[in-house]
Length: 173
Image 1 (spheres, helix red, strand yellow):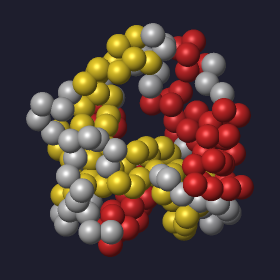
Image 2 (cartoon, helix red, strand yellow; image 1 turned 45 degrees about the vertical axis):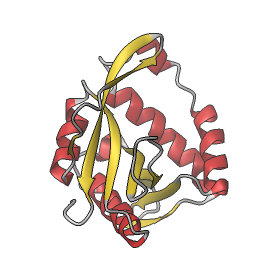
Image 3 (tube, helix red, strand yellow; image 1 turned 90 degrees about the horizontal axis):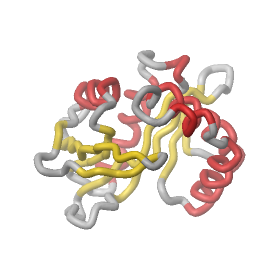
């Protein structure tokens, strides 16, 4: 598996994985009709622009045959209460057919190295409080809940709890 920076022509593969991973990971958490209606085309447009703008940084995991297996978006932490030394994993999604095969961990390791090189001391991310699979994955990487950080977001018109998790970069992974 090769980890490399995303290029504009990767936007379609990123969008495909984004939608497929949402539909698999959030089944039973987010409204089924909403998940079924997710648009790969809309996500492709968003990610193509993000890649060109360089924010967030995007890395891809690519199989030996060139197929994209997953991606990670990361950069400076967007939380207003975050110290300048905190990075953030904005999103990490792996093709559901490749779950539990080390793709996400490989992506995290590369993002972690970049954040360390940028002088970041720790990284945070937001995870749906009911997404136990993701919470277990992040715990295995060294992420722990940030006490008092719970918040509620609205997806498909329904309130959903989120919790911020934090990982010291010198120890993570």
